[in-house]
Length: 87
Image (tube, rainbow, N blue to C red; front, side):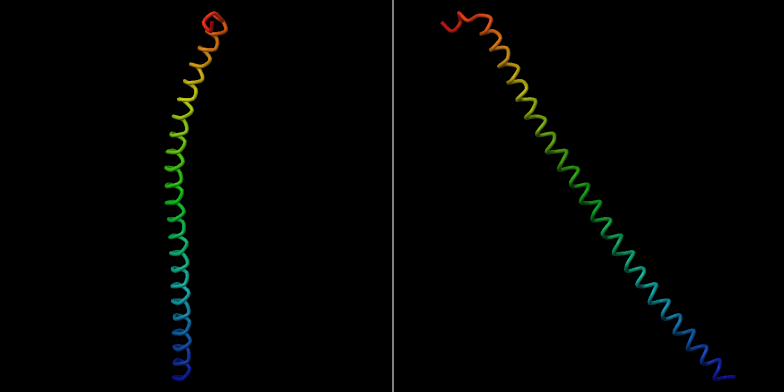
């Protein structure tokens, strides 16, 4: 009966060891996933900030081009209405 109890104790110790090992592996996996999610989130924040900055710069350039185009349209319409200005 003593040997039997000892055998069960070793089996339980092995099972506990396996469970602890599995727990550590699960924690390591979860930690790895968490780190990658954090890195992805940081990348997306940086990408968003960079994209907003570039879009703002493009918007300023487009506004400038639109103002120049409006000025040219006024000059062309004035010249069309008064061809004598070119003589």
